Amino acid sequence: MSSITLRFLAEPSTVNFGGKVHGGTVMKWIDEAGYACATSWSKRYCVTVFIGSIRFHHPIMIGDLVEVEAKLAYTGNSSINIAVEVRSGDMKGGEMQKTAECLIVFVSVDSHGRPLPVAPYVPGTEEAKSLAARAKAHLEASRAASGV
Image (cartoon, rainbow, N blue to C red; front, side):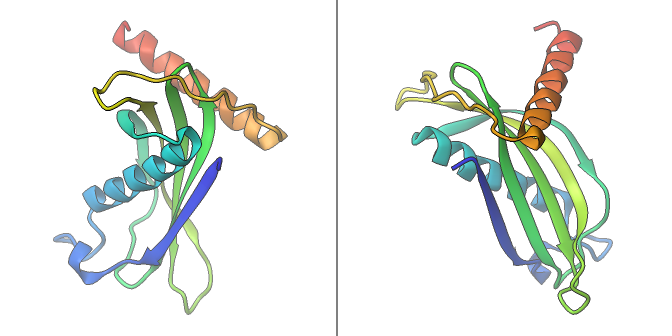
């Protein structure tokens, strides 16, 4: 499976001091959707090794319908690069807006935490090819900036 979408309602227990869903909660949802996508691709346990450029566009209100979509962008030897987009909206209005997005890298590991190879992902559409190129460029820039 190269994508997964989680859908649920934003609950009152996720509220921050400003009365909206806490950013940390959104980050947790992003990690969970990314993990589900990476694990379904690798068929093994995966660990988060990088979360890059998380961008919050709009707040999520309590009671909003939330969609967290995780898409496989590309794979390395043992890494699985996932692009995640969060959308939310009032169900009565029917419109969803992008509320957050980021790139996450997971690594497939064995029971001792050692990396395991993953099946290569070959993007099949122009949209998927573009996503793969953007994700790869972002990670290369990040590695260059950190000296890795």
